[in-house]
Figure 1 (spheres, rainbow, N blue to C red):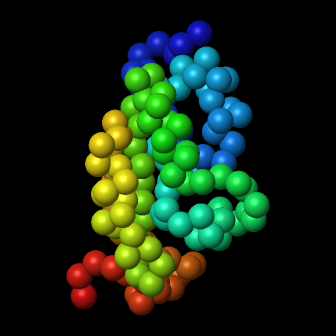
Figure 2 (figure 1 turned 90 degrees about the vertical axis):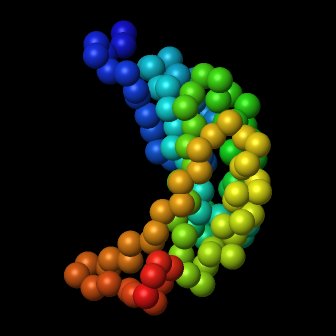
Length: 125
């Protein structure tokens, strides 16, 4: 049963369990996916998701989902962080330019409790 009046049912994920869960999510009415993908470098990806040996290529996740995008609205969110992945922005653009998805670059919001880590900001000074 689809919930009456809902046009979009979306999930945000890092993609680790998506392949396994996708059939059930699709059956439940999922029609949009946001992938949190802050790096195209496998070692950095493992650091971000805090799981070693995922054997999950971040590029593969995007390609798999791009292949099924005719069923979904697909968006990739990339948080840009100084000293971590700002050197990958053009790589993201190049990698995704011909894929049927939207890429959104998001500025890192460095809040740790009540303190802000300004050295990680990439925006204007």
